[in-house]
Image (cartoon, rainbow, N blue to C red; front, side, top):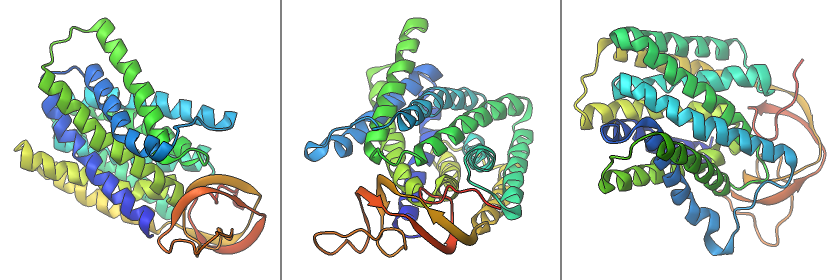
Length: 343
C-alpha cells in the first residue's frame, strides 16, 4: 500500500496512546473540558505544517467541501471526543481502546450505505466480527459495560461520518483540515465547558492535555487525512484500526490494568475481522471524469499522468493537479478516484 499505509500506521500509534493518557487526565478534567483542550492541542500540533513556509490554511474552494468540513468538525471534533471520554469514565482504558475498532465497522457500513464505498461479503463478515468483539468487551466490563460501550459506539459512528467527509475533501491540505477542525471544535467544547462547569484543573494538567492533543490528535489526524485521501476512508481505517491495540498495550504497561480474558478473546476476533475487511477489494472497468484536487499521489498508479518541470518524486508528493477523462480496469479500493456505482 506504500507511503499512505505507513502514515496511517504511525497515525494509529499516536492515536492509540491518547486513550490511557486521557484516562489519567479525567481525574482532574471533565470530559467536555478535556475534549476542548485535546482538540485545541490538535490545532497547535497541525499549525506548523498548515502555516509553515508562507502557506495559508485556506477554507475549501467550493460549497460542497465546506459542508463536508463543517460536518467533520461537528461530528468528528465536537461530538465524538466528548462521547468517547464519557465512556472512558465508566470503563477501563484497555476496553475502551478495543471498542474504538467500532469506528472501522461504522466507517465501512456508512461507506456501503451512503458514500459509494461498497463492501463485498468478506467486508460485511468483518464488520459483523468487529461488532461481536465489541459485545464481548461489554460483557467483560460488568454493569458499566453496556452504557460505556454504547457511548463509545456513538463516538465511533460520529467518526465514521467524519472519516468519509474528510476523505472526500480533495481541495484541502491535510494539515489545514486538521487545523480548522481542531481550532473550531476545541474552542466550542472549551467555551461550553467554561460556561457550565467549574474549572479545577491544575496548569500542569492543562499543558499535558494540550500536548497529548498536539501529538495524538493533531499529528495523528494530519497523517490520517493524507492516508485516507490516498487509500480511501474504509481501507485507511483498516490500517488505523491498529490504534486500539496500541492503546491496549499502553493501558497495561502504563496504567497497570490487567488484561482480561474477554479483552484477549475480543482482540483475536478483531484481528480476524480486520483481515476479512482487508481482503475485500474488486476490479472492473470504470471511467473517470475530469477532476482537479490536491492530495498525496505517485505517478505510477495509472491515474496521475500530468507533467512536472522535472522528474516527479519517486516516493510521491502532494500538490494541486488536474485529471483528464480516463477509462481502465484494475483492482482498486474506493479512494478519491474511485467513488463510482457498481453493477
